[in-house]
Image 1: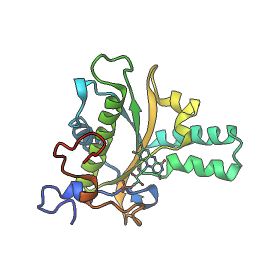
Image 2: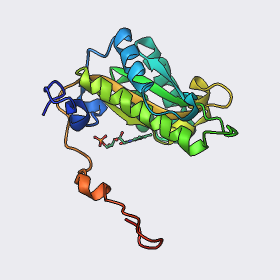
Image 3: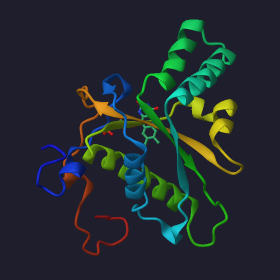
Length: 199
Ligand SMILES: Cc1cc2nc3c(=O)[nH]c(=O)nc-3n(C[C@H](O)[C@H](O)[C@H](O)COP(=O)(O)O)c2cc1C
């Protein structure tokens, strides 16, 4: 099944993450990214808080992000060669989209975990829209999202950096990292079982 099959569920049933190694130009245009963000905004969102935003990193900005990644790696004591590889995590993908959380911990209606779920739904919709439009992508994070220079390059007060989606035109996808369970494994019928004997 491909994302363009007539099955309306095809994009949902065929999406897989595509890492940087398998991404080439062209990257999505700004107009296409806006369509992906529109799809992200369809995710369930208790109280309509939109507890996330996206920041696009393309062109020369990738070099500037690479500078930050390299500096963080060197400050963490990594050898020069490893720091250079960290730099490439910013410069190699055709495009990056940072995912920034803006969680309202004191909201009277939507709990913190509900807001994180809304964010997860949004980034999933974003990636599925990219796939449906013929692009590949993958959500990445790693310890550098918590490094102060990286955080402060993206986040306003009260925000936190979740990571970034790498995006581009897929050339192969590599081998799936994990196999998916059969749907029956994640769904059962609850018929009023007493406590202690859950469905
Ligand atoms: C918030 C978040 C952060 C992630 N960070 C990483 C990461 O740093 N490195 C990585 O290899 N996979 C990371 N993943 C997992 C991949 O994006 C991907 O989902 C996983 O490899 C499974 O592939 P699939 O999406 O095709 O099932 C992350 C996923 C999420 C949701």
